[in-house]
Image 1 (cartoon, rainbow, N blue to C red):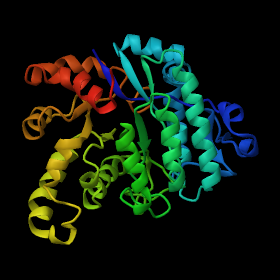
Image 2 (spheres, rainbow, N blue to C red; image 1 turned 120 degrees about the horizontal axis):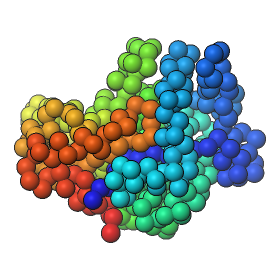
Image 3 (cartoon, rainbow, N blue to C red; image 1 turned 90 degrees about the vertical axis):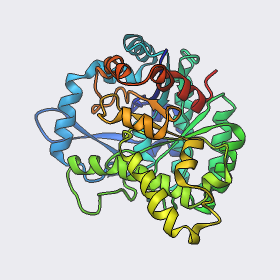
Image 4 (cartoon, rainbow, N blue to C red; image 1 turned 180 degrees about the horizontal axis):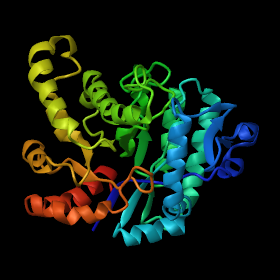
Length: 365
């Protein structure tokens, strides 16, 4: 039994014309062909590229990989193809995350009204996508982080559909980090409505991102943004008291591996909490690792070489697995690596990673 805790759809560009509300349809995202030779396209919004520091060479290289893996990309757009791909990978249930919408909402200067329209359109489209098999295709909703006052309403809408997860970027948006007081009603609503929060980064965002102040290449930006933004997101939730105030809140850290976590928890426990906790005593009333073990989860990569040590250090109740399908940087054969991993771990641990833990995170019945 396998729950894919981080699987993706790829929103067809023409879906915006159907799902955006009428006042915003003329501002729908679109693709612009650039370069020569291989067809290359940039996602555009209001006349500007959505992605930051994405060079023409990187666009061409991504297009070349996409050409080779075309059927997989189609599975991200079509629910029937998605289900067939899940069958081939022996995935029973998939939590479906956005692709282009995550990038669109990762524009710091985005008009909050347009952000709200994009949020509602995407959630409606994904609802129809999942309706092909709602038992296996589980929606992960988005909220309008550009307007904190709207986040609770967005959450309540898809929670009423039975969705039990929302995705946020770990980055600051319009100067607000995750622990900003403006987000407090949202955290309370997640706890009250039993909705898990999945933190998911994406490179080339137009919000403040680790590494973007000093690097230019996709190689460097992708390497920095995923693990380093997750480290700072966990810190924000602990230092800002979100986990202290909301002990029933569940948070997942996705698509950054787990190797960063032992070091970060060790440092937060043994260096910061032991020596510097007085300033944050009201928000941080226990060791940071205790907050993580109590209410957080991290997605592993099955070929990370230190997983047996991580299980001994962290335990076996906070680890989950996601394929990242059908993104171009995911391994097509990633689920084939699970059996060898099971041979390295104590008995029963792999079963927890693949089913018990994500079922608890996402309230899968």
